[in-house]
Image (cartoon, rainbow, N blue to C red; front, side):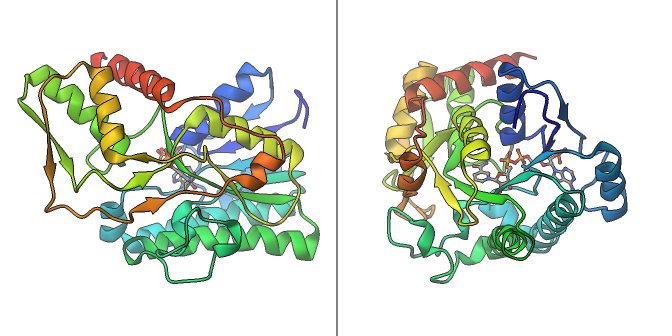
Length: 309
Ligand SMILES: NC(=O)c1ccc[n+]([C@@H]2O[C@H](COP(=O)([O-])OP(=O)(O)OC[C@H]3O[C@@H](n4cnc5c(N)ncnc54)[C@H](OP(=O)(O)O)[C@@H]3O)[C@@H](O)[C@H]2O)c1
């Protein structure tokens, strides 16, 4: 891949796709191809094929997907399995048909078994039952990984898959279906504005999660596009865990909020740990650069800017 390669970023308006675009532009890549969801629905095989035939991308990063919270997954399981399978079936198959030199597929850590031993190693995929609430989504994500491997095996296609940790950062989603980190940012921000006496934390605050700044993920994607050619999926994370309470305390500090932090233990905690084993990507020479404190500050600054608009 060089600076004049034609690269299609599917899902470029999303959290991860937009970070990849920022990174590519920063590095001087000049031929980036994008289409909004509105202008090209990747579920539409015919229109997606005309796009591939006309644009002939050399590299594809598949960051287009239907993504949402556990609650959204629980409410719309049919949409989560159908839309994700259809988008990835179209993009992966057409990438092969139109001789794309390399494709990077974004998997998800929910593809690991619910009771996976921690930290989660790539070999643990498909060794146990999935979390039932987002099983349809996780099955679609697993199918995408298997599809890349099958095209690699049968056609020799260089289609690689990665599993990133929980991603956060610029362009994150702050709606009612948001993940824990943006939800806390929004809650502390509102508590500051309204001078509220308390901020509520769901659960006990004890579960630990791995938070991965989106610009670091973009960096990892480009690194792996250049250096990684194996069909085996590869984890990408920071290798560090933070409890929900520690996260809340960090966001509280950034926000300047002085009120009380209250636990709502009637809410479920979820898994006590979800940490990826990222030793494979480390051995290739890649490491995340952004500390959680820095990433949170950058996300907070961006959120404030958006909130003022
Ligand atoms: N966020 C995470 O923590 C995380 C962690 C691990 C893996 N991943 C994976 O990374 C990928 C991207 O996630 P994300 O967080 O960046 O999601 P996101 O912010 O929701 O972005 C998804 C993108 O896909 C587009 N899209 C959705 N359906 C489409 C369709 N039918 N046709 C064309 N475009 C469509 C969206 O456009 P509209 O918004 O206009 O619909 C948006 O640009 C997903 O595969 C996800 O599983 C995410």
